[in-house]
Image (cartoon, rainbow, N blue to C red; front, side):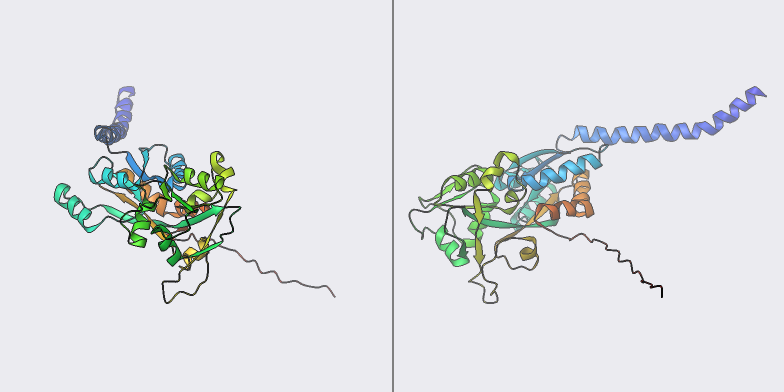
Length: 313
């Protein structure tokens, strides 16, 4: 009887053991594939968006402890695009879509069509020293300024010659290069902010996310600069006056210097998982908290309780 009872227990447990073994094998196989592919967990990010992406990744890692965590490199836009195109990384966060030629190159060389989705809207911000009398500027004046038609005592700085900000400004103005002696490309948004904070005659052009909730290492510099209002005097249908960037002015399309933030990935589980997170409720709330405009504004439920007051007569 004891022997038969043991056989019964073994018969019940055997299918469960087999399921556990096969599940373990599958998990090990998936992990092995990720390890064998050296680019499986690599992500490149336009360095202009480091503050917001750092926040997103911190929460993503905490919420997904058992999944493959990304290895991040922050690079100027040109380098980030090249890394994505040559398959050095499978996931990229950029301030532009790929061009028609870039899509064609991916189809021709790897028969790949990347997934791409917008997750936020950023603003290109004009800043000056707190002691400056400049408080406003028009779109026409910005174009003239970048073309060299400005006061000689003014110094214009931005983050990096290969950055998304510079590419945006070239597209915006139609200039192929900025060769004027009073225009300087530094190394980062932090350096541009620091330069403006220390020079009353400087004008800086930086990403809006660097001015919201800055880290301690440059927060003192942010306190010494101010944002300039921009008026779109080029568009015939725009009479909004001088507008500074904010979530409301971005949502209402009042501020003229805006750019989209995209996540791109090629056959990447990490890219798919991170895209789902950054486009989900938690990821979009992080964007909202940062001061940028999320692609989908999270819904906030408000419960109104109706109470009927009764009086005792």
